[in-house]
Length: 183
Length: 71
Image (cartoon, rainbow over all chains, first blue to last red; front, side, top):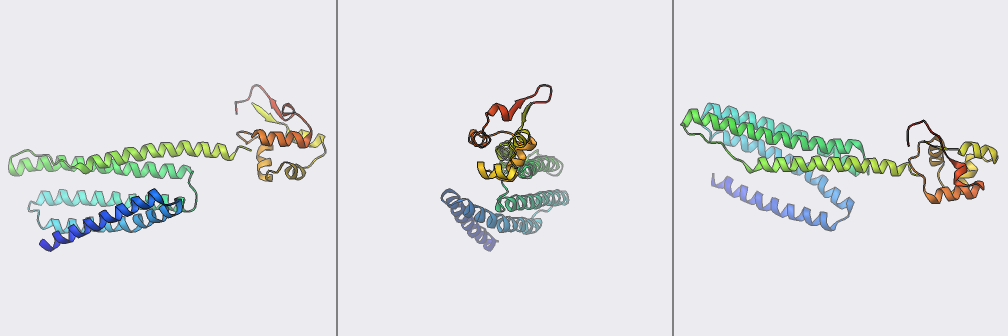
């Protein structure tokens, strides 16, 4: 258990340093460098995140005793992992388009809208599972407890921001097409 | 609706699209967009170059026709 704790602390430190490095590159670097770094981050970072989700979920199953809780937990992890896999592929599509210099396309606006929707679905999943866990605890322990999770708000904010970015991209695409047809 | 009367003027002046393209310095693809009426806007510099090359006024090139939907 202690080994796992140290491993998680090291992973957190490495991840924080990596995030600071990415922020620095995006702030100071040009378009191509930023895209390259984002590509690497999405390609490997998200895969590592999804794999760690799965491994940690399997590991934590041994610490949950109740049968119903295990069932709810497994269902939640399955839904969350599926959404993250969708997010991964959509983000890769978006980055491929950006890498090929196809920036102002309707498909890019649609992709960011879909990624935003997946984040909103994730927040709904967290809320619903939180309620189910809360109600299942009444039956097992007699006390009502709804698990609150900050990630719900993060998912909602990311989802809404992506919806706004998608609308901006749609408008920008319209202006770009008009500009292309200005002789 | 604004109509581009470039084809008529080119015929009147006995000039081909390729000759006009060379004179005004835009691509053939862009001239084709302009002639087909697919263009959303025209820059003053392009209009100026066309007028200079064809020895005409903007009014000769751009005509307003009522009844059709707006550009």
